[in-house]
Length: 74
Image (cartoon, rainbow, N blue to C red; front, side, top):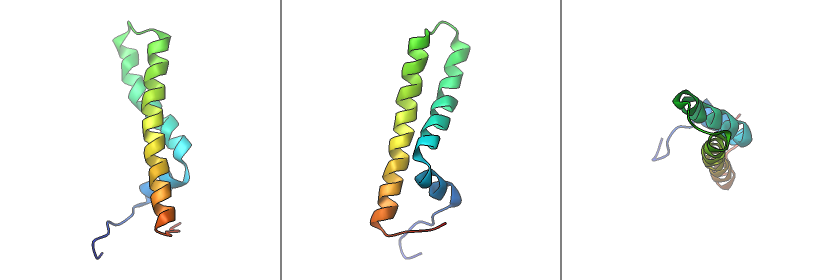
């Protein structure tokens, strides 16, 4: 569409709910570390914070990009 990628419903939802995206992604990426077994709770918390904040910042960036482009897709 004239050089612009189509925006799917997942990107719209993640832009509307960046904190929820961070929590879900943090849980999904930290869950495999539970199977390792010899990690301390501090290591798991650090992993959750790292991955959760990374995905939250990505969703916030998408929200800011959409606001800058004046996109209000629902």
